[in-house]
Length: 147
Picture 1 (tube, one colour):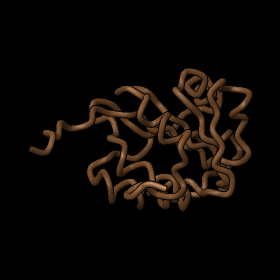
Picture 2 (picture 1 turned 45 degrees about the horizontal axis):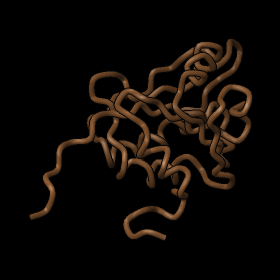
Picture 3 (picture 1 turned 30 degrees about the vertical axis):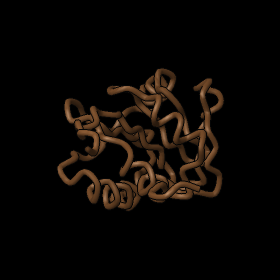
Picture 4 (picture 1 turned 60 degrees about the vertical axis):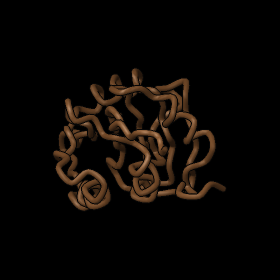
């Protein structure tokens, strides 16, 4: 256990977040998502919801300020999104990145294609329909070393 790191951020996830460069993407996938089919680098966070992971990740992770740093899947024709899902995520995200724009919505197959090029997929315990979220990492602000 480390001080200042949320207990839901295990060693593998912490390592992946540290290895990512600016512009790299990580997928927080709901429990139904075909993460192992779409990615070779899959981490497990079974039983952990995406809002809890966001609370743990965002103090450690700068969102990209040069692009739309969030993406979610659009509803398949004939289906409907639950706006409360995005609202729950944005409630957490905006506490850490107040000016962030709402997520870009992508067609299912375009979303899958983007996941294939993501740095990693985290399979969560999130059960919300269309609950998948892509985060694009930005540049960490310079912090001088303590004297």
